Image (cartoon, rainbow, N blue to C red):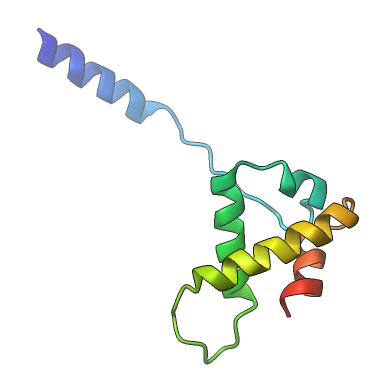
Length: 94
């Protein structure tokens, strides 16, 4: 009986449609960015590092550079809360 209940529960969970989550960094304001949880900020910073990397750059994640860029981005966003994250990143990461 417990196996049947477990299978039914799994089936119901699979039937629930998953919501895709998207972040438009050109629309995300700095004030919203700094309010995000730490994991989301880290994911955005990693994406930005890849986005602004030169084409021939080796596929290496430089955590020290990412931390430095995060600090610069945070400082910029603190002074320019209405700018988009992409605008801020263009100023501090290029």
